[in-house]
Structure formats: structure tokens, C-alpha cells
Image (cartoon, rainbow over all chains, first blue to last red):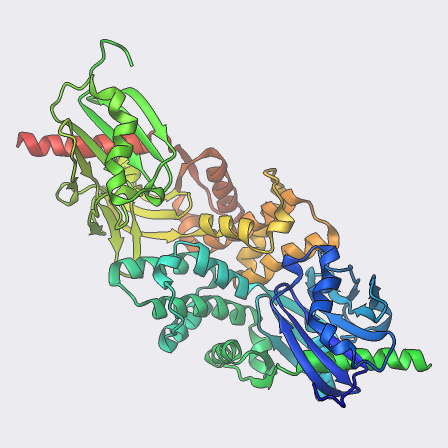
Length: 309
Length: 309
């Protein structure tokens, strides 16, 4: 951090396994930090020390006493620092009144945790992605349509008039992970991280043509490894294609007509885009990197408006 | 074992995690034994000592030198005692020429390992179930149609004229296990072993109506647990119903018209029967307990014919 720099708030994206933090002056990023520590590895009392461990170095540059810290993600889950409520859709991605203060011993900071979103039927929840979607709307206030946020629990949000109308979570990423690591397919996939595009494409189409046969198609990857010695990168691509293909098939016409915006890491986003095109649709790709930060900015601005009213 | 009893062969059903053994005089069971030791926990050199540990007590009663031991299952896999070949379907469930002798240091026994079955397209394999199907045909030589053998890797075999024409493996049981234990759904399922029939039925129909939406339907179980506090036995039944329902939906008309024979444990078989009926089909239940033994008997008889020819 520049010696002359000062900061007036900190934004934190705090998920199940990772934390990212931004030291901010207004809307300018002064410094960033990251740590591999998340909700899954912390007890309730461990959140404040873990946060201070990351941001302590910035506190001398604070021009605010106390310095506001705004956090989104699983930090607000029942197993998190403090449970923040769910706001039921349809609603704007960020709702000031549903953000909660977290109990904090250190008087140099105040911590606000952003709420999650819920949907009654079909039952669904999100925590963290609402802030990314707020960031998407901050960058493109007129955005309407379908946004896809690939991840462990992949979210599809239907956005209109600045609100999230409804959303669907597919646990495709988690299924891939546990099948690849824990099931009999681990022998076929090996440790290869390489990827066979052709095998992926065939599997996407196979899933769309016969979605109910998933668990037979999965076992067939193991059998093909035993009988035909298919390479680990082919096996990995087939598993990925079956699972992502199934998800795209479930969205059906919605994904074909909507030209969804895919927001996420390059690798995963490109697989989703590929699967959408194979199903006769089209997609745009948005850089996901800045979205959480932009959403935290929006939450900060909401709170400032609150204070000055 | 009766003091006066003697034995002339031993049959062994030896899978990934368990071993069951029968001490036999002709077709009469003289004694049985079981051990929680299987392919997954043994190195190549460990199979013979593990077997002797179970059958040693019977060897004094042997009237044969050496005493024939016939084994089926994952003991013949690549990671097993010795790799037995796959026989490609269509074929009879047991093929004498594809059974192999296992290397054995103890001169009191000879060990024969039964082959597996394979299918080229779609790629599929079985090891152990071919012996159960041989047992089914031994008990009912005129059996034709569809046999379902529920388990970790559930097999559906299409049987005609004493042969297995083709088969399909669904890794439904393994998916249930890893999702229930390793995924985010573990929080919703808890340790409950109770089961809600109504939730199971609804999930079977849900999977049939929208098979592609599996990974969204799975996540919705977690969300319903968070939002509505659904009970663990409801969550468990929904997971089971979605996965079994998907499998039955994949079989489609074949399962509706065939009145399949379900061969397996009471609990799992009754869930499959229930799901088949919900999909407009019908099923018969056969007691699976004696089938492996009956199949091993058939393998033994095949070898005796071989010797006396």
C-alpha cells in the first residue's frame, strides 16, 4: 500500500473455503488480500481473529473510526460468523434492511454481513452470488435476462427491472467433484487435468438425448476405461460433459432463447458456453473477477445513503 | 460343522468389501462363513492368507486333495487376486473356459476364479452378478426377460434362452452413498435411517417428469432443509426417490412391459418395486440370498463335467 494512501472501508467476499478482501478509498481499490480460510474451517469465535489476521496491516491507514467492513457470502450462514437472513425473491439483489451487524470485540472496526436470497418453490437459497449479481447490475444497470454464475453450486438467475425474479441452483460442480474423487470413476479419471473437447461435446449431446440414463452413462465411463483403456482426459471430459449437459438440458428453451450472460472463471465459463452452443443456444461471457467487489461497493453505497438520510 | 460331515468343495462370493463362503458336500451346504474383507483392502499377496483364515477350520473335513475352491466377484478384478477375463455378451452367464486357476501356495486347495462379463456398446462390465444370474437360471431354467440386481452398481440384465443378451449398470447406489455422506446434502440427511414413503414417491415422479433437472432437485433438498426444516427422513427419502426414479425412467417402456424380477436385499428391492409401480409397471421379487451359492454350484458342476469328459 502506498504510504500516502488512506482507506475508508473494506469489502470482503467470504465463502466456504476462501476469503478475498479489498481495502477501499471510496470506489478506488487501494490494496487487496486473500486467504484460504472460510466458513467450513472456522468456529463462530474464529471469524473475527481470522479477519483481523488479513486486514490488520491496513488498519493504520484507516481514516474512519471505526472502519466499516462489509462482508458477503457464507460468512452469513447458520454455521458462519452470524446468521444473516434470507430475503425472498422477487427482490433487488441487495436489501439494506436485511444486512446485519456482526458482533465484534475489536473497537477499530464494525462488520456488516450481507443477507442471502431465498425462493419458496422450488426451495432454493444463495449466499454471495446476490452480491455478484448486484455487481453485474452496477456495471450494466439495464441488464435483463438470464445470468449464469458457474461454481460448486451453479446459479442461474432470471433478472428483470433491477430485480432477481427467480433463480435455480444446480449442484453440478459439487457432483463433479465428489464423483471424480470419491466414486469408482476416480480410477478412470486419474490425476489428469487435461481435457478432451470432442469427448466433452459427445457427452453433452448424450445427456441431452437421454437425461434419465445419467447413472448408467457414468458407469459406462468406468467400463470404457477397463475395456477400451480410454485416456484419463477423455474420461474427465465425459464426466464433465454429462453433468454440464444435463444442466443445460434442464434449462431447455430458456437457455436457447435468452442468450445468457455467463459470469465466472475462464475455464468453467467456456465449458458452459460450449454446452449452450451445442444445445442450439448462444451466450455472452462477462468477466466475473470484479463483480463481487462491485457488489460490495453497492452495499457500501447503500449504507452511506442510509447514514446521510 | 457336524463331526461326521465331510466336504468336497468350497464356494466363495468375494466382492469389494465382503466375503461369503460355503462349505459344500455335493449340493448340500455343510457350513457357512463370512468376513468383512474384500478386494478394496487386500494386496495381491493378501488374498490367499485371507481365504485360509476363513476356511482353515473346514480343511480337516476335506475328502478331496486338493480341495476345490470356486470364487466369483471382484476377487477376479485387475486389482484382485488374479485377473479373470471378461466374456462378451451375448453368452451364458457362466463359461467354463473363461474361469482361471489362481496361484496358490497351500497345496491343500486349488482356487478357480470365475470370469466377468462385458459389453462393447455401451461399454459395460459385471463381476459377481453373472454368478447370481446363473443361480437364478438354475432355480428357474425357463426364466426370460428382465432381471434387476440392486446394489452399489445396480445391474439390469436382459435374459433369453439361457443367455444374457445385454445388460446395463447404473451406479445409483454409489451416487446415493457419496451424495448422502460427502455432499452438502449430508447436513439435511443427518444420521437418520428412517424413511418417508410419501417423499420417496413424490421424488420418483419428479425425476420421471424432469430427469434433466436432477442436480437442481438435489440442491433443493438442502434448501428445503434450511428454509422449511424438512426432517432428515424426508430428505433421505427424496434423495433416494430422485436417484432410483431417474434409473427407472431411463428404462422406460422396457420396465413397464417386462415385469422384471428383482433380486436383492429386502429393503432395496422393495424401493425398486415401488418405483416401478409408480412408473406404471409391475415387478416380481425373488429372494437373492441363495443365488450366489446356486451360481457357484453351477460353476462347480460345469467343472466336474469337464473333468469327467
